[in-house]
Length: 121
Image 1 (cartoon, rainbow, N blue to C red):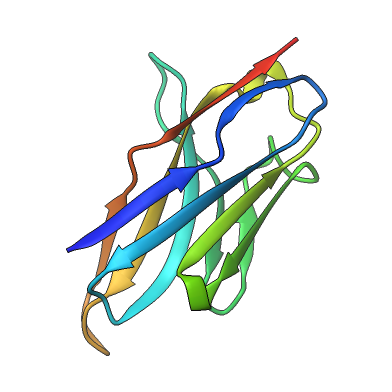
Image 2: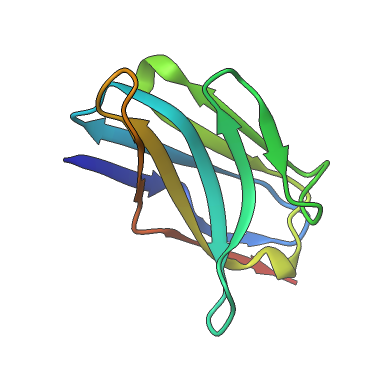
């Protein structure tokens, strides 16, 4: 069983910064990628940023230049540094971890419970 836990959300003023953390734990062979998504009530969940095990990153256009995703493989943890926050960044942020149980086996994914980010104007 794999567990994923996000932390670091909170209330911040527009223009401020927050850093989210996503820690994976449990039984797995390797983590292939970790992705941050966000969701506003009544809207679909959208991808914000992801990092692959080789260090490749990708961002949604709406956060490019403001958010930075990074990872610490030794800690099985990914981070999302959010700067120049806007009220429209308000959402529940979820982390999805993609992992393998065996060397050439399929990739599984597990979502965390989410952490609320609220940006006041």
